[in-house]
Image (tube, rainbow, N blue to C red; front, top):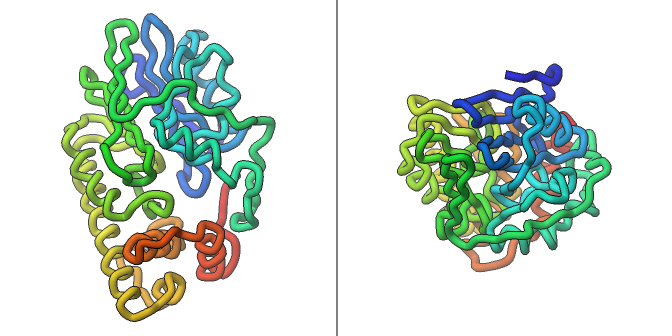
Amino acid sequence: MTETGPDTGVLREIVEGVYAWEQPDGTWWVNNAGAVAGDEGVLVVDTCATATRTRRFLDALDVATGGAPIRWALNTHQHGDHTYGNSLLPESTVLIGQTSMREALARDPLFEHLPPAWTPQPEWGDVTRRLPGVTLDRALTLHTGGRRVDLLHPGYTAHTSGDVVAWLPGERVLFTGDLIFHGLTPLAFMGSLEGSLRSLEWVASFEPEHVVPGHGPLLGASELDKVLSAHERYYRFVLDAAGDAVREGLSPLEAARALDLGEFSSWADAERIVLNLHRAQADLLGEPMDLLGALQDTVTWNGGPMATTL
């Protein structure tokens, strides 16, 4: 285990040669990443939001692997907390993503024009937009030093349209990306609430022994069912609230203000209820979602910009 300082990240070796980069506290713009090392090089799973955080991760990984070359890197989806550090990877690294993920990152409006919805306002640092050079639709398998890594898309939109998990069947390690948020409010405003709900059974079907969620503490097999159950309750709660709001003619902000979050009120980033309702109501009405309007409504519900630790 390598620590780089308080609240900056911990590199944990899950099994021999398989690492998770866990960043407390896992809320806005603070993700988990990871790596798989083999005789033929290293596969990195996601980068981080800022140059500073990505360098901390890559420096810790370099120490842990004895300077092994990063041959491949996977983006589990397009969001900036998992991708903006891509340009700090070596030029020789083959960057991989799902087809629609690459397209979404190419047009991501937040990279150059982040609205004042967070405080402190994130500063990406000396990064440039770097897109995957290799794309997959449903599946791709990598082999390094006898170790197999399956890169798999669920076949439908969930957290985003381009989610990919990294599954090590021999070691039973699963990197879920943001299909799992452990200990904080899930987010599906750029994807689908129905698809996110559907993806939970897919994640469970791997029967992993070790799970690296996109955000929050690492999970063992004994904890996964509890976390998946909590996600299911939350997604059903949002979908029910969205259905009621559409029938009553309420806006997502009005619906959120009328809700009692109950068991979910203690989860970090509870304000995501507004974003999730925007997504669910737009889908129910068959309309596009207004991203900037949804962020502004979230700031209004929150009583000010959302907190970050960047």
